[in-house]
Image 1 (cartoon, helix red, strand yellow):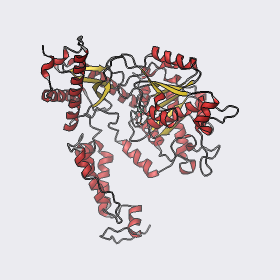
Image 2: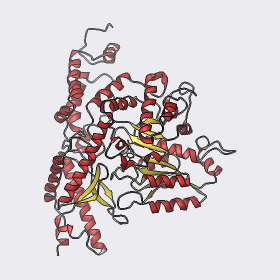
Image 3: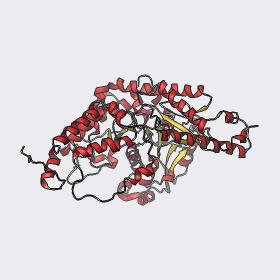
Image 4: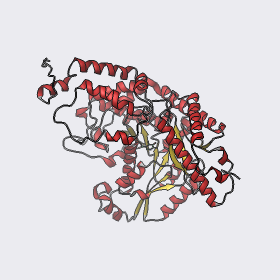
Length: 550
Ligand SMILES: *Cc1c(COP(=O)(O)O)cnc(C)c1O
C-alpha cells in the first residue's frame, strides 16, 4: 500500500489527510500515543483505571456543563489523533466514574474482566452486522449456537430439541438486543401479538393495529401484571405496544418483596371473569433491580398455566445465577417461563451494551417477523428478521468467547462471591447500631438505612400519626444527605432508592442500596464504606434533634 509520506503540519480536511486518518494512525507520534495508551488499557485495565479515573472527581456537574456548550462542528480538523487520545485520557477519563472500583457498590454497572476490552475491540474491528448473513456469515451461525447454549441453560430441553433447532433457519430460540429494556419490550410484543390473533375479518394486531384488534376480540383493555418491584422498562413496553403504561399493573409485594400471590391470584380471577379485559402477560422478576428479590416463580408459572397466560421472567439481573452451583436453585421455576430476559452487560460482565431474550417455543418469534426486499428474505438465516433492532454488533461473539475463557464455573464463582459478600455485608449492617437492614439479601443486592441512636427507640414505638410522619421525614432527610455527601466525597458509592419498608406502609422511605458484583469488593472494603458513613453521620446536623428527646 502506498500512502503519502509528507505530513502536513496544519490541520486541514482534504483527501490526503482523510486517507491517512482512514487507514492508519496519522503519523508516528499518533501511533506511539495510541500504542502506549492501548497497551495500558488492554493489559493493565485495573492499573489504568486506578491511575486515571477516580470513583468520581469532586467537580460539580454545573461547572462541567459550562465547558460543554460549543454547538458548532469545525470545518477543518481541530486535533490530531495523538492529541485527541491524550485529551480523553487526561480530561475525560478522570471526570468519568470509576465503576470498576471495589468501593463502587451502588449500581449494576461494575468492573469487567480485562479480556472483555480485547473482545470488544475485535468485535469493533471485524464490524460485522448481524442483521443479515451477507454482513456476518459465520457470526450468524455462531450466534445461533450461543443462543442455543443460553436456551439450554434456562430451559434445559432434551438434547434432540437442541439438535433440531441449533441451526434451524425456520426457528429461533432467542435473540440479542441492546439491553434488558429492548429484551422486555420484545417479550411483551410477542405476548401481545399472541393474545390478539387473526380472526375471520381481522389479520392480527401487528397488521391491523390496536383499534381493530380490540374490536375484533371484543375487548376494552389489555393489562400486564407485575409486582411493584418491576423494572420501569415494562412501563415503556406498555406505552410503545399500545397497552398503555397505566395498564402495566403493579401488584403489591409481601414482606420479602416478592409478589403477593394472594393478591396476584385475586387480580387474575377478577380479570378472567371480566370478558372485556385481556391479560397479555404476567411478569415474574428474578433479581429485582432495587432489592434483588426473586418472585415465587413456580407458583406464578402454575397460575399462568391454569389461566393460559404468557409467563415472562425478567431475569435481566439474576439470569447468570443459573451458572452458580451453589445458588442456581434460587431460580427454580424459570424453566416454566414462556420468555426470559437476561442482560449481558450486567452479570455476564460484558461491556455496554448487550442483552438477550429467550422463548421456550422456537416458533413464537414468527409473531414479530419482518421481511424486506434487500435483506431478511423469507427462508434466509438472516437474524434481523425477528429483532426489534436493525443493524446490530456481534455481542454473541463476546459472550461465546467469554464463556470459553471463564467456563460456567468461572462465572459461578463470581456470582457466589457477590452473593456471599452481600450476606456478609448484611451481617455487618445488623451488627452496627447506627444502621437498619431494610431488605435481607437473596442475591447480591440489599437495602439499608442509617438510623441515628436517638431516633432508634421510636422505630417500633406507637407514635401519633403526625409524629410518625415527622420521624419518617427526618430519617429520609438524613439518608438523602448521607448518600449525597459520600457520593460527592468520591471515595465510595452506594446508591439510594425509595421503598415501602413493610407491606402496607403508607410512607415510601429513602433507603441506601448496594449492589455487590466486583470480585475485589471484600468484607474490609465494606467496613471502610460503613465507617465512612458513620463519620458522615457525625457531621450531619439534624434540624430538630430535640424533637424526640423526652
Ligand atoms: C437492568 C434491568 C432492566 C433493564 O435493562 P437495561 O439493560 O438497562 O435496558 C430490566 N429489568 C431488570 C430486572 C433490570 O435489572
